[in-house]
Each structure stands twice: as structure tokens, then as C-alpha cells.
Amino acid sequence: MRPILFASLVLGTSFTAHVGGGDHTGSARVECSRASGLIRLHLDAERRIGRVVLQIADANGRLLYREEGRALRDELVRVLDKGLFPKGDMVLTVKARDLDLTQHFTIE
Image (cartoon, rainbow, N blue to C red; front, side, top):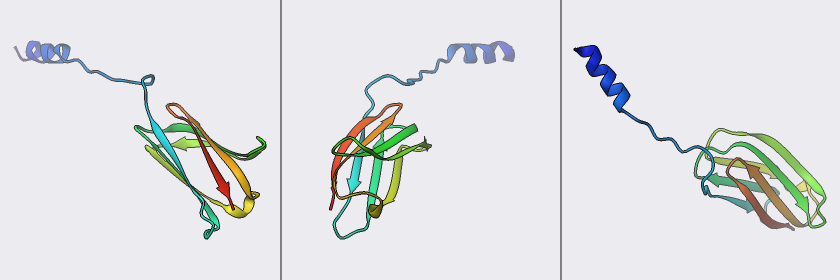
């Protein structure tokens, strides 16, 4: 009798999983103050970010920084030295499984 009860419990249970697709949102925040020598990049997502590509380019489109990696959480923080970049307008581009973000900022 027990094997029949166990089998009916296992077969009668269903699991629902939502993977990929959908409208997942996230945000990119850049902190680059004149008083600090650092650039702080902060990414937030609804779920684990996974593989991610970060790129910083100048106003002319010249690529100045690129990083490929994996974020195992729903947030990612990077701190960069402002001295590595020329002054002017920059564009941060983030591409991941559920994220495709662009953020403009200025280095003074």
C-alpha cells in the first residue's frame, strides 16, 4: 500500500520553472565624482546575472575597458581607477543573459 501512495504523491506533483525569456529588468549605476579617484560600477538584476560583458567607450566609440566574467549573484560591483581613463564623456555598456544596458557618464 505504501509504494502506491508514494507513487501517486510523486506523479501527482508538478513543478513550474520559468527560465530565460520574459521581461527581466535590471539597472546600471555609475558613481564618478570629481572628489574621488575611483569609478564605481553597480549592476542590479532581478535574478542571477551569469555571464556578463562590461565595456566602457569614449564619446567617439573607442573602447577603453572591457571585462568578461560571471556574476553568481543578482548584483555586481566593480571599482576602477579613474586615472586609467581620459577625461570626457563615457558610455558603459552591459550585456548579459537578461540585461542589455547602456549608461552615460562623465569623467572630470
